[in-house]
Length: 76
Image (cartoon, rainbow, N blue to C red):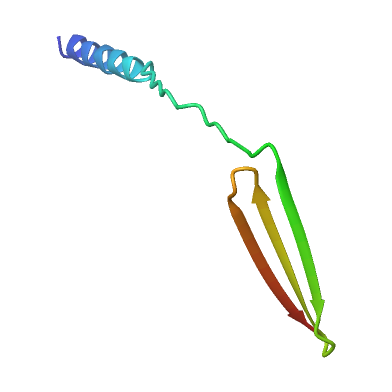
């Protein structure tokens, strides 16, 4: 009788473990859309100070009128 109870308990635990392994998790992710401007103007200005330092300015503007300016200075 004791052997029968142990065998039944073992079968139930195996059945529960097999059930837990069949869990499926589904996730719906929204689509990622990157909207890039069709046209973009870019101007680059380089200014040499004569003392070994150079300043470079880059300005970008899209057709919507949004602009971004980045300025970098390097010295030797």
